[in-house]
Length: 128
Image 1: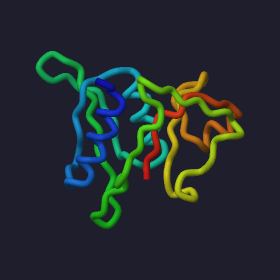
Image 2: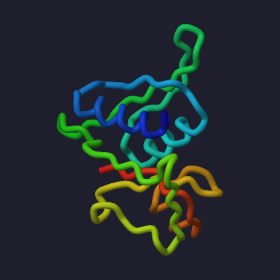
Image 3: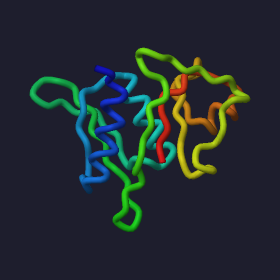
């Protein structure tokens, strides 16, 4: 299973169902993605907890006037097909109302941050 795809689908489904938070198995990659989403305002709080002896990532979701901030996700780079973008190929998602998340040599960055840092990388997914 693709753990990143599982994470973003869980975030989307929980936000559309009106859940306050999501718990998922911890990994450093998921934690870095969650911190990037927090920096961009798509999640409220990210914390590492332990449940039944296993580390768990607890993510609190954002709602605007009882409407979820995360309504749709699209996985770009998959295990079977990796997609890499150069800095000049990184464009805004949905005219700036969405978010592109990339794995770069400088860590997990949003599309805006990657253009500012002038780095490209593997395009992970889009949020809007």
